[in-house]
Image (cartoon, rainbow, N blue to C red; front, side, top):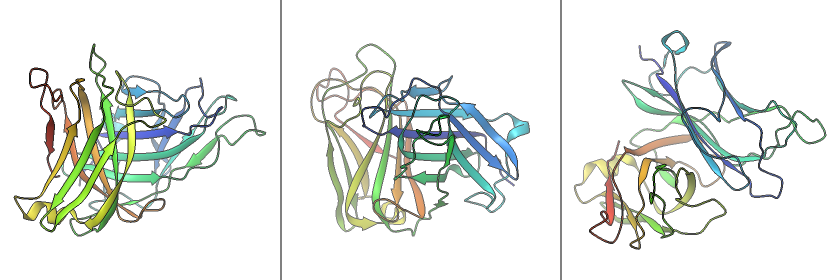
Length: 278
């Protein structure tokens, strides 16, 4: 039997004029009628903001008495449900949310993903509803065919950790180049100090995690294009089985903590990182 030891979430707010909020958004993770988590997300372990167009990353360790069983090996029990909520009448409009649990045996286990949230959250019934569910997904396997990617990045809260330079993600499989995508300006505050970012990355040729594990020539490379140093703190890369709105299976492809600075200037960092395949 394995146990959740923590819950993480990454949430992006819509870019509309009144989409952001000054209120504290909440997350609820409930299993078998018991809340494993019922917390405000603007607290210790949160990076980013809920201003319009912005993203936040939330991490919360679970005390032993509130951990839940991963009873069916990879995806958690069927009665697990996850919701976003608010306790304020200041409207908040999230548009994308991904939630995963961590365990000692299975690592990061994707639990829920919704890339097309449309309902605003508010205690004022004229503006929205108090809570919305985040659609459950299943953890993919080495054989799951990946059609699109979701890249979650957290930048350090330190002087000169942010960058204005573009970055790129490339995935090589034994069959050749599957992903080659440059990330530059988006409605988010991209790669600045103490920010979280969520990027949807297209896949040119569908592939599986198993393919990346079978060949030494296969790799996942994250690069910076410029000498304006960037210092990432956390990197998560997820593969989705259907592009782009309703994936059923989500594969954790890679995660990396404290990889060091990236820069095209060798005196400041390295130009690229090879991300480890989970």
